[in-house]
Image 1 (tube, helix red, strand yellow):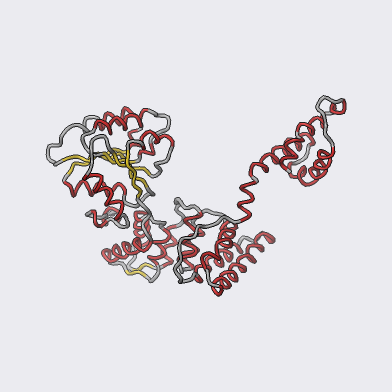
Image 2 (image 1 turned 90 degrees about the vertical axis):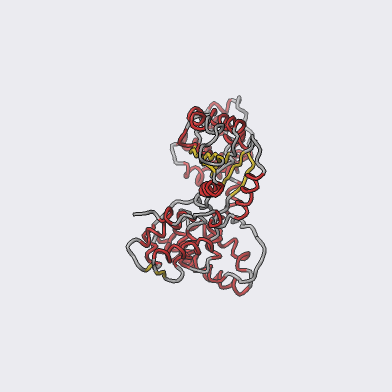
Length: 403
């Protein structure tokens, strides 16, 4: 069986979706290239980084020399593969393009690998492209000084949906309305994974429905809270929002707080905010029932209600407004160090008093605070010969700071 990601791969540079600006910068780099220069292309997976360089080489009639740095593993392997290729002329092509993929996959233990790549950049008589998902890793710091950097962005969901429609048409598959839109939003800008998911869901079928997407299950993606919230608020589809919530691995209780905090900035108009908060209040009821009754079936109803806020987003265009973390999460973040000191101290006191850390916090700590704030104990006094008193005295400063 042919993989659709290969079968429907763009045949020319103009077919690469969503990267017009980046492709223009690549063309400019090649036009003005001078020996000793390289370009570092970075961005998320599945957006066309490697494919673009392959197509550039093909359209220019150049020989592409490609190395995966994470496979080469060592400075010796990199130099043996590329050393001669960067200086010799090709027999049947006008020139060469050197591509080193996954440079961020070089083991941190092999410090000589980065130095070898820098040497290759300096000595090469052909343009060199480096590709990384994360170019900001500390081990790549020396390398970045020799490269101009360009970012490939996630492909917009509308562009992903358009490409999925083209694939379905070429494969002769009918699609229920809204299915490809949901699949596109779920891909988080990864066009390659979207096409792979489409092939899995459509296998052996002539028509694709939303139910067929269930076979895809959970795929771990780089999905932080700032990737999830736009899908929840902007999808205009409860099924797409629900899928985003269920497939992120994030705690629904945490997501609830983020939605509650940022809902006014997204729904804007009083009428939409009222509807959004009404739906969210129902989600909060199910959230409370989960906690009180330990009945986890209510969690599904809670997610249904949370995804319903996507139906009330305002059509009014407005500028970018950054998402704000919930007050409770901000407070927990600011007190993290204080809580760590408190937990460590209570655990040690619990060992001394043969009780749990929780019991120390609940039953003893309020009294210790009063005692220690009223009395200043000296470590060398006779009263501190008792082990318990000595222990409390040594913990006084930590306790007062923590409380």
